[in-house]
Amino acid sequence: PTPAPTPAPGPSFDCAAGFPNWEVGWSQNKKDWCCSHTGKGCPGTPPTAAPAGAPQHDCGAGFTNWEASWSQAKKTFCCTSSGKGCPGTPPTQPPSLPHDCNAGFAHWAAVWSQGKKAFCC
Image 1 (cartoon, rainbow, N blue to C red):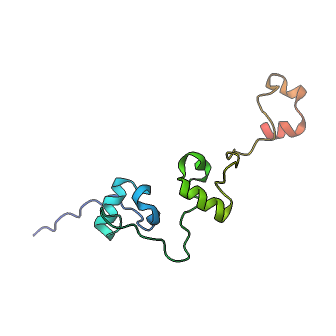
Image 2 (image 1 turned 30 degrees about the horizontal axis):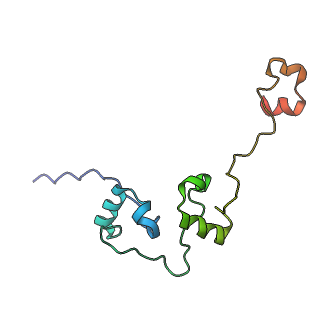
Image 3 (image 1 turned 90 degrees about the vertical axis):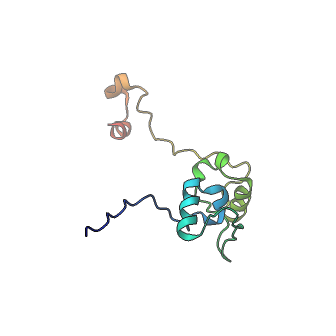
């Protein structure tokens, strides 16, 4: 007899990642997969508290867009615990560049400083 073909592997998920906030933080696909494979994220499962001593939220996750993407609870937790996401905190900006390589480009050889030439070229 010929052995049955091995089914192609489907998507898999890290069911520990984001588990303290699975109800709103996981996609439906991840909920379905984790429920059927690990018993986590199943409909009707009561919310699970994070283990004692574990942070309630990952304050590094989504920090580049915290103003729009974090829940109020995460903002409060992260502001109190790590100083991130506090009211009045200026939006995160990428670091500014030391030179504007478009400024004076038409006459770069004559007007740019050596530092600007080294940076832009």
